[in-house]
Image (cartoon, rainbow over all chains, first blue to last red; front, side):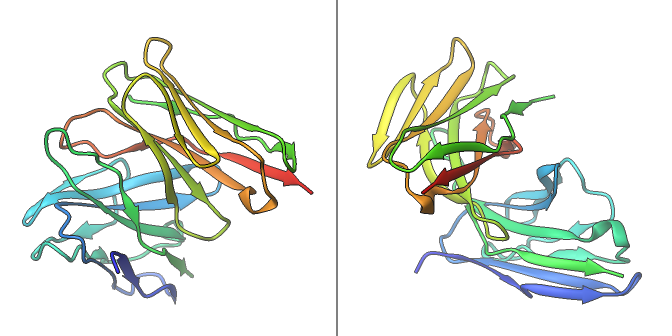
Length: 115
Length: 112
């Protein structure tokens, strides 16, 4: 089954404790992206990756890191989480390229609470 | 700054009627347009995409695109209570490095 998976689905942590949210897709997609979704603010892009070892900042990258060592995986790293990073996080993937359809497929989401 | 605007709603529609959801976008160079449905606390689910001016139909859903007016809409015929959700409009400008720009969504309520 074609899918994007994220782990963990729910996480409660404390300020400053480093954490990683994993994302994996089995569709051989080049493009992967992380979003956060907050009430009234919609989906905002954190980081994206066009392919292995190619990453770039989205609209709200502060406080986050990513890596893309393998095509299927795109982990999101919070080195020192703060309460304002409490949010619902989504990973997404899509094909890219000239004439590509660019429709993105989303993972199930990770609800993060930082106290 | 690329912007995608949607009326936040809620938009209340009687069961069986047509629900009409609208979206405008600022980047005239946008090439691909998507509608996602999102239930509360769940991930966005792609339901329609459209690239060319005109209408595209898929079951009870019809997407309409007017690039001259920078306007895209989604019609849901024979609305069902299960259609109650937030509908996100997303736009892609065609450049490979750009992701999707999302609107904030319209909350649709189908009244039984």
